[in-house]
Length: 105
Length: 201
Image 1: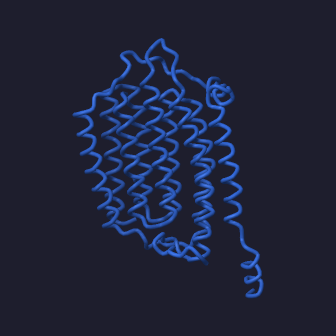
Image 2: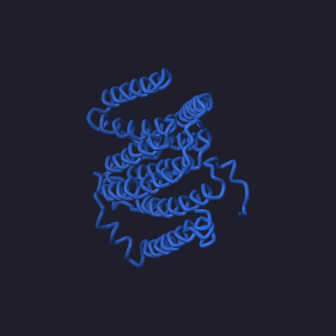
Image 3: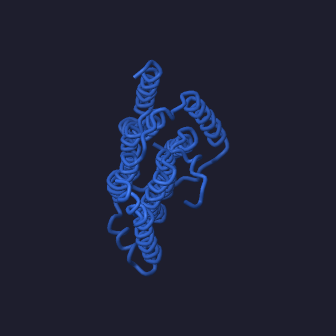
């Protein structure tokens, strides 16, 4: 399959991530939507890296390395986001992002 | 499971079969493998958005993350596919499930019209952008592609060699350490809360 097929899958996944954030008003769906969006970006990075290699030349690792760092930062983001989400449950006793509207306790 | 659920899952299954058939017809075995993983990715996230229960949505993400790993495999990045499964399915999904278990349940928040409107809007938007892109952009693509190279050693060397990615690697390590310590600090129960609970109970 060509580059276009991968880009199409990635675009659809990105859009579905946005829908998950906007349509399901729940902090956990916001988390899941962000993970979908990061996955879509990763598919793009790896696909462009793959389809940029001509036969014979030494292939570049840049796209794959970028995807690895995105995965690392996604792990950090998930840990911090879970901690914040737990505090939101604790303080507001709700899963709706719209109800978390105070900066102080 | 009510009628709309049945209709939705039926449509997803039909669409998957059609996509599988089309890709197999167009590109043979490669196309079938690609279609299988793409269906896992998109079907997983579609069902995640559709499902009422947060637990089921979280488990549907296994399809999305695993399918992405499969796409990486098809693109010749086996190291990336492995770390995708380890970190996303093993780590991030477990974290999300912890969040699900510790959250107050809310089974009434899925508004069907909103979900349908979102899906329709996304379908239309993606179709419009895809048509625009397909008709205008001319991807500069290598004429003959190299065989997919399994570059695990080169990635390992790239992490540590001083002239490649070592600075980014060190920075990622520092960010990860700081983020995890900060997450533990933010998520801890404060002494005041524990004392209050002790006084109540």
